Amino acid sequence: MSALRNYIDKIKPNFEKGGKFEKLHSVFEGFESFLFVPNTTAKMGAHIHDATDSKRTMIIVVLALVPAMLFGMYNVGYQHFLAIGQQMGFWGTFFYGFLAVLPLLLVSYIVGLGIEFISAQIKGHEIQEGFLVTGFLIPLIVPVDTPLWMVAVATAFAVIFAKEVFGGTGMNIFNVALITRAFLFFAYPTAMSGDKVWVRTDAAFGFGGGQAVDAFSGATPLGQVGTAATSTADITGILGQPLGFWDGVIGLIPGSVGETSIIAIAIGALLLLVTKVASWKTMLSVFLGGGIMAFVLNQFGPDTAYANFPWYCHLVYGGFAFGAVFMATDPVTSAHTETGKWIYGFLIGAMAIIIRVFNPGYAEGMMLAILLMNLFAGLIDYYVVQANIKKRLKRVTTK
Picture 1 (cartoon, rainbow, N blue to C red):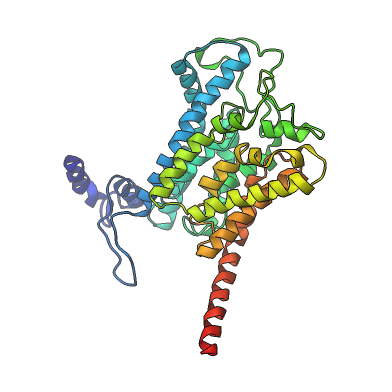
Picture 2 (picture 1 turned 180 degrees about the horizontal axis):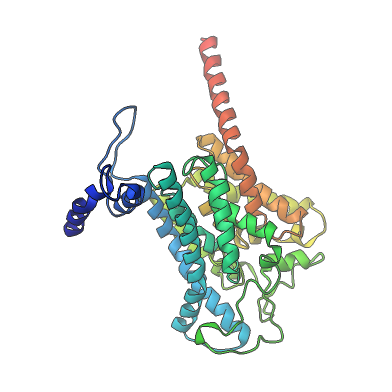
């Protein structure tokens, strides 16, 4: 690494003020700080200095997402070969999924980082690191068959209107990756719903053709619940096999790329908690809110399939667990006070179940629940702080 450091130092003057490439200073600084921890420190104000900067924090989140990404790639291939009735080994299955998901990842990063670079150059600012995580999240929360041009348009919209207009990383009030999904859902609903968008049945990548079997249905389990009348007993996989709680935990079911396996998500959650990047209070409270609300609706809700869906299955199907671990804990858009984290997370979980049960046309409630509570996170913190101030004033007055 010392040779690389010496080379960076050698060419650095060309990108500083007065150098022949000074207009590309933001781009150079972005690559330099990505490779090496910056040696600059704050000159004034109260700051805590340590060896971890925001880029390193973002990298930890990306590493936590890797298990969900790898499992999602395998599951894409697994669902494909299951649907067309062909047998394929582990590596062939994974490689198919890898080639299917890779274009989504590339489009997400190329479009998002391209806008970030251009914005930094126009403003004369440093390139912000927030999109390191956002670019990785976007391919994990969309159907694998989403057209790439739609992903590009949605990513551009989200980065510009949900991030840059608010001032960039650390200033946005909405989760940028979820805004991307929301844009796709409302602008291109046919690409985000139905049977065909969740499972690839084409003969791409030279893996041969084949026809989907007669019993094939690519609908997600939650999508099937939405079309049921009052019973959830007939939820099945793409070959008609019945699905239960443990199928949701393992994750070999149709769904968004990174949201199906609770085991893979749990591995990422453990890394986030051990490194203290994410708040366990927010994470736990989301599951508590969702579990309690689902249980209440199981007992007293309307006689519909969603209301009768077992409360514990609500927690492992759809994007509930993924949202609780990686979206609700976003340090920029979530509540920051310790009490506020409990309130914020609980309301997300409860609201996600309410949306699922009372709006059966929208099978997945987690996205809207998180975006709604993003809007109220600052208000929750404000009232928590005000309550603490009043409590302390009352204590002083009493004495």
